[in-house]
Image 1 (cartoon, one colour):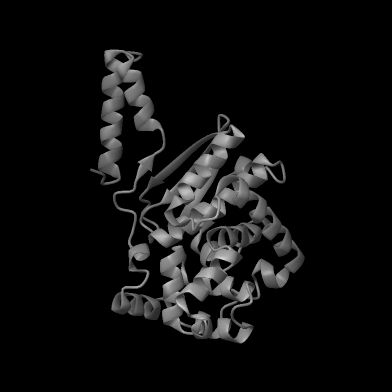
Image 2 (cartoon, one colour):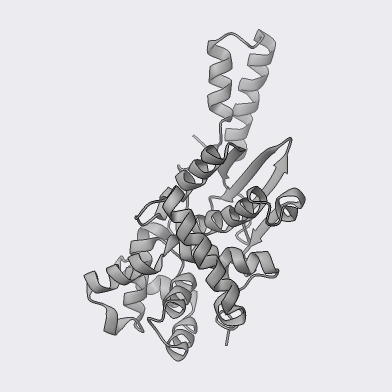
Length: 272
């Protein structure tokens, strides 16, 4: 049996989990509003950076390693977030929300070590349990941000699935609504009191192959299982290059070198 429940912040450090909930309420009011985030997580991150007046580059590109979800680091006073677009979209969104917590801790001076030393989110941390205290908190933060209690309760009532939450199809319905991975949805249902510990354990025993099989059969949440082909982004690199070229800030040699570099990036990452 996996230890997703026992290793979660909610079970292992309930008081700290309540603190993260308080942070989420304030954060959501200031940077999100009353909506389901889904793929808007990247806009939320940029909005937070803009309001906090911090330099941030959000990069999304394919990394041929499905164990690596995302990484964040600081270079020359700019925060860089890199998200692996070969992953299913729902995992990309969760990874971005996870990394947002590390940025939050850095900006709010709670703990700056992660960003300064570099943060890397792997599949074991994102899919199972955090290996460090801040990763545990970041997983809880990501789940609460992407699936807030109030909106979760409203959707359960709206779709009439309150008495069917121990069934895989109901989990897929919520995955489709909130664009979150299977295990993250089950954990949020347990944290919010919508399912029991026993029900959560039973659901978590369902393997990923069975989840995907049911997804393909029903079509539920299928869109969030696709990879990020076509969503790649190199932050402001292309925009900055075009601005400098239009204003003739580049010499002919520099412009040609930059164009060659951009073409090389597209070839390496198989981008159109």
